[in-house]
Length: 334
Image 1: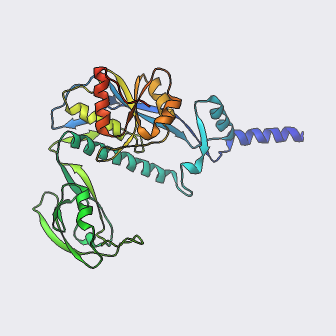
Image 2 (image 1 turned 135 degrees about the vertical axis):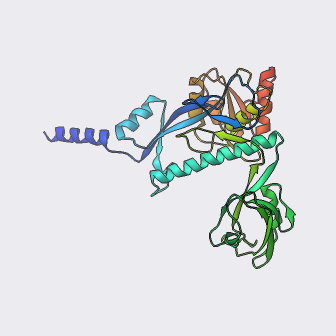
Image 3 (image 1 turned 120 degrees about the horizontal axis):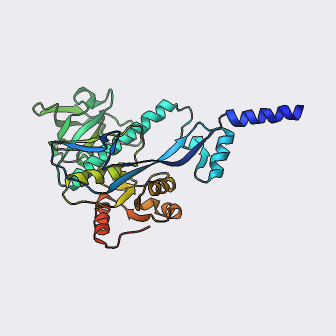
């Protein structure tokens, strides 16, 4: 009788009680040249666009943090999923809502970076805007998010690196001038006194604002995709924007998938979950996968048969590789 009770108790615990692990596996994929729920993933308003043929498919990883003991064992045994300690993906005390908001922000940042990187490569100008102003900082009384920086400390601003260069060597207590535009109004110049930097060991004067590059174009780039988070779709978004805006067909009928975080300057960074993404891509029909250089070894060990891996380090390299693929020339492989 006692043993029966113990068995029942164990079964109930195994079936109902959550364990501090998450299950990871292949997630949904989305063609950035296509539509989801009737809406284009990437659309451009106010500028001529061109027809595309083929796919540029972004990939995701599924993550389930509602895992029971039996569920974790079953997923692990399946060979399709991996099980990892929850603290590797969620900080202690972090709520699901906090995680969701962070993932959404990363996804939005990846869209912004993709737009700037793509349009910069196509030769469009860039402007520098204020992304964030620190409350109570010297900039707080003069700048607002969205203001366009024109001149900082006597130096004309053409990209966010110019802002850092203009402020290099300044010290707390010194004054600097800021020339900027606010919501289309005429330029104005304000002088601020630099504060002490909140980071220990940082001697440079503190302004208290975060500059960011944005494309300066008379048209709108829209990226519409719900229920997806994280930064890893940046490369595929950038390629889709380029393909939409240029008469040359980047993929020419190929089913290309890929992943990679992207900076505003077009550098492609490593991402997580590449072993699941190559599986998801192949299952979606992809025959080519763009892999960040740093992820090549892991991707090569997990790539299914029939999936060609192309190594990329930056947006220029990715575009060149797709051109080479189209022309039948060799491409960088993992």
